[in-house]
Image (tube, rainbow, N blue to C red; front, side, top):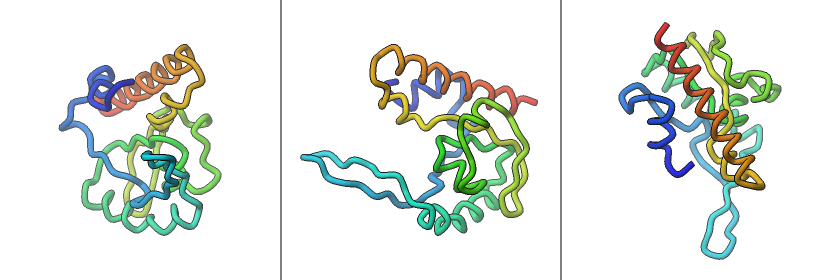
Length: 140
């Protein structure tokens, strides 16, 4: 995967078709040389950002939400959310007063963490497939 634009193009999602947001509005990181390595937010940090996500969903009123990774899923459905149980499935979801369709998938950074090119290609193909499921669910 080289860019989110290419990913969006491959999944046939237009820029006007999607609204992107972070479920957690801040990130932790450690410095390694000149690089910042992102760290996973803790449960209290995920829950602390819930009111922003609630407000965004109430304003935007999307018909469908794609959860990119476990943190997004846990922000919406709690700590027991597991990507593998929901990946690539269009399901009904409710968060606050919002109700609509939800599709879970891996976070795009999972592609980069693959130990070899074959596994990265496999994760990328799954991500594209999940986004196509989201596109089809939006079409009705």
